[in-house]
Image (cartoon, rainbow, N blue to C red; front, side, top):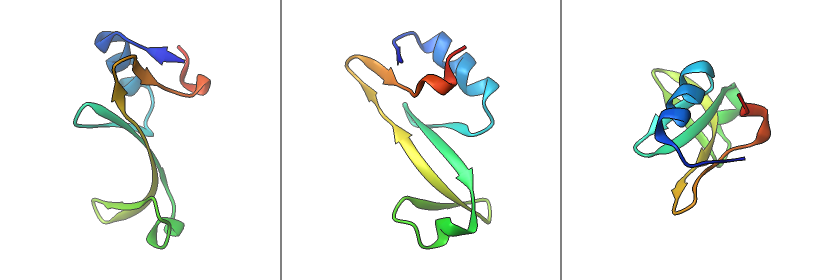
Length: 69
């Protein structure tokens, strides 16, 4: 699903606890100790997560359909 509108994207992020802003990109973070050794693992506020980044492109943000509102 392509999202081109910033206001719509802000609503989606505010309604999904796994989604966070990282600059203009969207990070989908799932808390797990496996993040410690995962290639896409990140540590945020003392907790390990596996993170998927959905970058802003010239077409907008391409999010999975599970985040459809």
